[in-house]
Image (cartoon, rainbow, N blue to C red; front, side, top):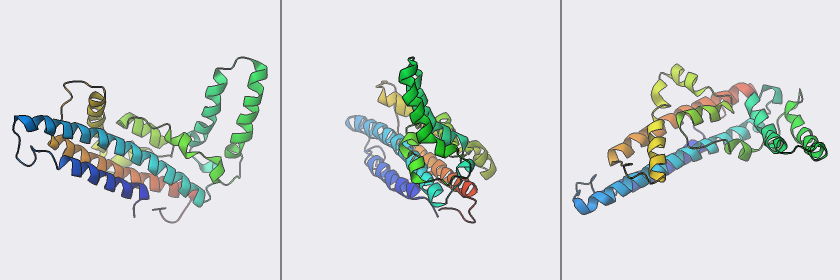
Length: 230
């Protein structure tokens, strides 16, 4: 089984495939006028593909949180980073407030809102975690950003990929994100071909399948389930 997030990603990848299928150079019509269209389609495909990978990561994180709640996870078994990121929201606001009287109600709010996540014996409920807070930690999905984001869910993606014999899967997306950034920032030399698009579609699909399996295993272990959540 796969997550709903991965199923949705496959539909999004089909969207990119439909776009790149229009490339005139792919269908053997690469005259001078069509070269610009070919480049535009490939560049647009890479930007869209990067966005779809980012969307998948956010969706699978939200699905994992739902599965943790459904699996009655003990808060003490949750990844520490998943718990602390909720407190970080309060702390960032507190850092800018120097007056003690102004800080006091914010500190009170911090403990009132987040202490359930740190109380031994508590079972996780939907009100204790905020998927938006977690998903806001995702940025352009390069290998470093993906690794750090998945750590919030208790996933060591590099170790998972080593164990699965697919160690290079994470690094392959750096080329995609690098090109996406160059295109988005208007760099004139940021070219791409339909072959590049095909390569990165495969890279995204491959990595997403690995992430899906790793996140499912992490949820199973936290909740001490006898089967994977998907």
